Image (cartoon, rainbow, N blue to C red; front, top):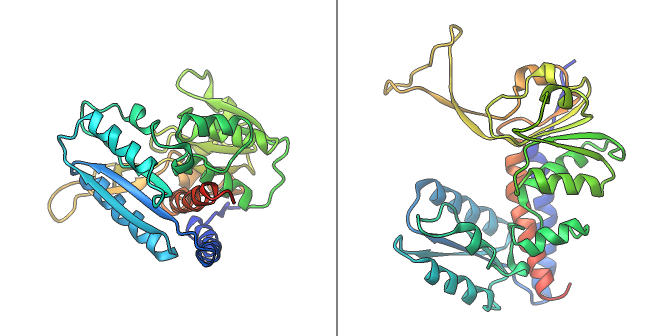
Length: 300
């Protein structure tokens, strides 16, 4: 029997509806969310991301503005710009667009964003709060993965949870979030021995390793909940394993996750697709964090 597909788009829509109502209530009290994006130089992929952010924000009533700094901006100038936004009471949330030009330490600059305006949840102070169970501002992708687990309404307490990947934006925060839900997490990574043995024991499997279709169906425990965080671009192949070419003679590309969906869905009880799973929920978590940042700023 095939797994139930967890529809990230539909789930995100429900959260978005709730945010619209919450934002309307905040505005009636005189509080207005304003997300400020900072981009240094031109980048095609970043530009598309910014356009999507703006569209999503404005659709639910969040003001979104973009500060575009020249490509030759130095780290010191960017630092001063971030500090200025930290002190701007009209700005309730700040997001620093990646990538940054060479010569700028992205991690260093990102940590300068005020913890109360850190809508990506990446400031060390917010990471520290997560250790203590404060989940108001958490990395968006990590929270999206956990919210999707919760969405299937299965008892989480005591469940063996294997997280494949130890990044600061997914693996590590997910492990802490699952601990708060009284699951029993195991974090796997490049140094893990016998990965399939670890994944086959998981009642909940969260894949965030960044390797296309690395997790196969035979690596999954029958009936497991599978959350696929991966977003990988790969060539489309024909039945003989050869690349399919487009009208321009170039290989067609498709987006796949870290889990081999075709085999995994025949084993799991619930599974997220790629695309259409974690991605849409990650975007709405950014919106939710923006609202939370406003509430923090006005002590709500």
